[in-house]
Length: 281
Image (tube, rainbow, N blue to C red; front, side, top):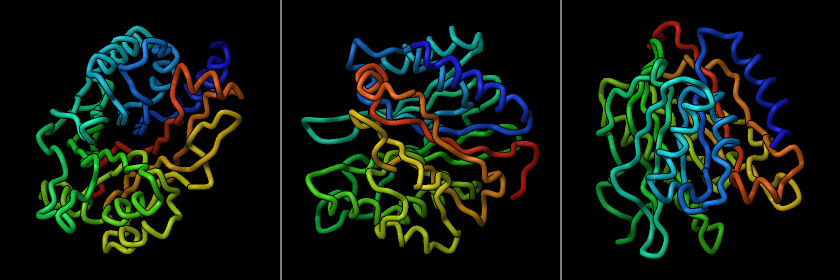
């Protein structure tokens, strides 16, 4: 796909200016590991812009391994990965969460943070169809917990809103899980724009949680254009002073919407920039 070249060149030049910054991304990879027609080379070209990527919709572990190997071929650097220890979902549909990162720049501190486990489920039912998953990382002087979440799409918007409404509990759970770490990032596909009223509880949190990606940006790919703002990375304005305020969406489609939906994904990657030069906490 030649249309990738201009996009990747532009962002590589832009990103390389800042040696004291790192780029943390979230990407719904659309059934990674299932489809043999996946264009891993093209995926690796735009994911190589980032230092740490959180993945949703990983269907088979081999997909992550293959993508990691392709990233190494693309960049000439060593990359590592972590896949959740089990899949989440229903009997008919299950997926893994995964992280991929540049080994020289990013360090995995604790892979045992694991899945969100509420004290009790609501009305005897699970709070999340796919429980969020977290791990601790350090980039430069910035250490943090990166939580991945894939909110249910469901049969109605009510189901999505029910899960989004509980994100403050997810934040509190991971905050309490690791008493030494106050920086909590929650990235993923929320199947709702960040201005939806269902996020009001997390936005009212005492730690001043806010979205990193302006929901004016569309992050899903329809057959004839970009459609919804479903992907985001939430952070604490109170604790995560390392967030520079720079963030965005990598649009690799170049108008080829149907083509990239088949060979890449129906989502665009989103990212935030963090200052890794000193610890502000």
